[in-house]
Amino acid sequence: MPERRILLVLPCNPCVRLGDYSLCRNWRVILASLGDLVGAGLVDLAAIDSCKPGLVPWGEERLYRWCDVYPSSDRYYRREPWRLELMVRALEADLREALTRYAYIVYYVNVKAYREALRRASRSIPHAGRIIEAGPPADSPLSYTSKANREALRRSLLSLLEV
Image 1 (tube, helix red, strand yellow):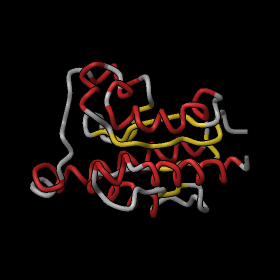
Image 2 (tube, rainbow, N blue to C red):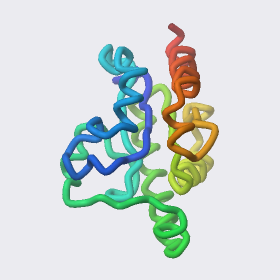
Image 3 (spheres, rainbow, N blue to C red):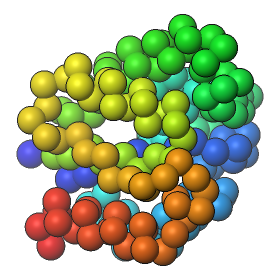
Image 4 (cartoon, rainbow, N blue to C red):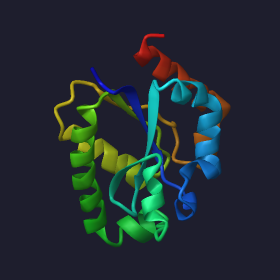
C-alpha cells in the first residue's frame, strides 16, 4: 500500500532561495485549491527543479537555497541540450522511485522544458498509466493559475482518489 495516494508535481519557483516553494504565488494558488487534500495526506507535493535536476519533495527545497535557476527553454535548455538530457535521466530515476510509494504521479506543469522532460521520462518507464499529465492546457502563468484549470486539476485528483 503506497504511503500516499498521489504525488502532485508542480514547477519550481524562486522561493527555493527562501527554502519554501509554498511562499511563491504559483504554489500558493495550488494550495488554495488543494490544501484540504494535501492536509488530509491524500496528495503530496514535489517540484521539478533545475537546481537538483529531477524531483524535489516539498520540504526538501531548503537544501537548495543556494540555487535559483530560471528554466527558460530558449536560454537554458535549448542552448545546452545536455541539460534537458540530464533532467530526463534524473526524472526517470525519481519517477521510478516515487512509483514505489505512490499510487499515481500527476504533473501540473506550465514550463515547456519541464513538461517535455516529464513526458520523455514517463514514456521510458513501464507505469501502466500511473503517471498522468493534468495540464494546464497552455505553457503560461495565466493558464496555470486559471480557476477553471485548477478546478479541472482538482476533479482529476478526486477521480483518481475515487472520492
